[in-house]
Image (cartoon, rainbow over the protein chains, first blue to last red):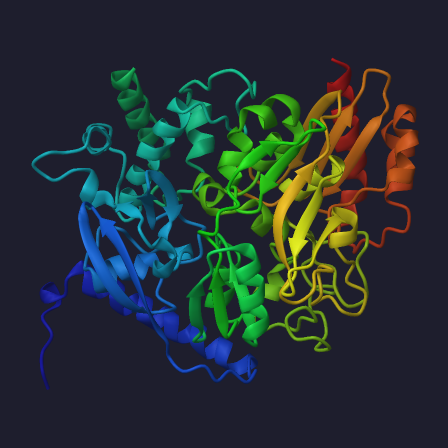
Length: 212
Length: 316
């Protein structure tokens, strides 16, 4: 019998294994209750878009989400899969400079789009100001939600700059301000189970002040 | 997710025609609700017609002073539009109270209107649900129903329409323009668009198969104070327990639509003359015939109190 040295299992392999186990349970549940006739053969379709400045011409199983395309096909794994249902924000990327949940989007919906992931914002040698601020303010603990948090944070400051109001803006007509309440409201689509929220807001405030 | 074939349409008429050609086809706009349900195989279209890039993304003034909103205008762009913010504050507020920033960037105007009326038992494929599997029964009625409907429901289904935008649109007398597969066009009010569940909760709108919403039209602005007050279990990114959308004048007259309590945005025009008499009198008429469960009967009082807060805010 082959011995497994625990230290040779990477964090990614561990997460992949756990996710597969959860997926298998969910699939079993679905299979048990749904028996509608469905006889469409596996279908492929073409799509072209750029990711972090690099263009890609792909032919995909029609069902593939943008998130799975990035991670499993293009091996750009900075973007994370959390809930896979648009509730946690771990998969947040920028599409044509707007943040979206890449898990709730088919790759095929992005013909001609410009996609930016955490890898496209900065590199370890040349950090994006938001990445540097997250490090300085301890804006993460386990780090799993962080790529989504940072992509979302960058987009939030752009949205405020563009004058887009939020639920907590006192006036719909005045230019929104970078307040703690505004940041908290606008970041509500990104969940952090370690609870780094207050530090994330501080990191964002600092970047906003430097930009002003 | 079940397999499907895929095509991109280039015009609304072409999309409607393509839908008629292919059995089991569905339109895909933003996809934030449809793809979510497809992953759970609650929705399983055999063919997807991607309408994301067929235009319909403009907001234009009408000759009579109203607004024409393309079906594919994103929730973010609609809420941020200067005319919407200035003249249709209720609509901007409702949009901004809904979902998250990421979802509002992707979700479209018509897609938002057509999001499924749903409840946790609809999402859980281990549970009985007449909406998911017609005739199978409803696990929600005797289940955990705190979030669910109190009026307009039936013995088959007590799910609520969860959206915010449509509550505002209903109060603003918005209409939708559609195109059918044969090219015929028609206009529907939201009252005409949304069905009540009755014994067929899987049917939520009166749109025909293959019929596509192309535009949402707002009549000229209604003067008064615009308020959208959403009460929910957490202060952001949650569905409403109760939401009140109101346009109120200084003399106390106005119009009110309520969310979070019914299978569609709930507005009873014939109750509105009672608004100057106060929250109690109006709510009694608005909720006449309500059939709450033990777990959600608190919503009866919550509607009245939320409305009282709104009426009070409008005076100041």
